Image (cartoon, rainbow, N blue to C red; front, side, top):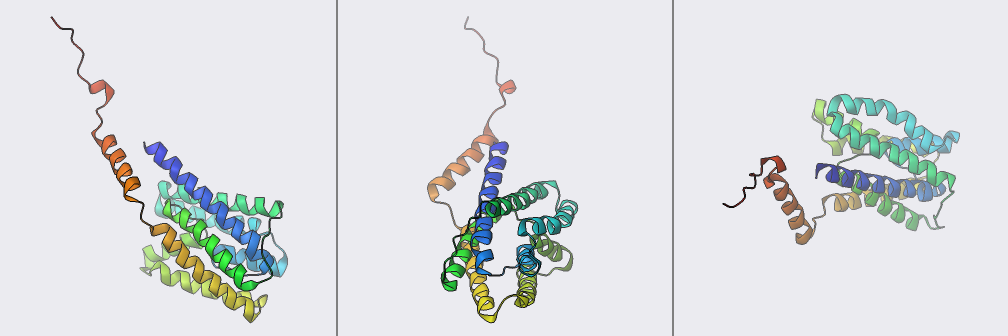
Length: 226
């Protein structure tokens, strides 16, 4: 049962990373929309120096993954490393396939990438994972300096977006803020949405069955009637 739960979590994390990576390479990059966190740094370096976002994300994520292992333990580390490398994989995959579906309207692009990114990240967090990067940094700051994740996330994202003005004009900057707002709203909806009563009851029943099941070797021996 625990293995089934783990595989379900990892599957949800991988699916979410794929959707998020698709939004980044399919809309953000061709539309020149920025982003926060390590992805935002990768997009910044891509626009300034032409570095591939997949490689940049990997370079920044490796030391942060080690921090995650030592601070949060192996269980959280497993889900984080799956989410991180799944995102790197999908970024590279979508790049190599040249999948781009941005349109000529920045408003539509910002809404689409915010929605897709929110769904993808929401799935990753809902199943107990993260895409690495600054997510690990926010958690470490909260643990050691008691600064809420929302505050540190806003500060880091704002700094990255301001630096992104090196390649962004004010119009792209404002549309990026719009996409980040849609992302945050959608992420919360996906992460915290309540399952229908049927699925929740089934989940609770499986947990109860697992707790009350009698091991095979503890069953009473069969005795033939006299």
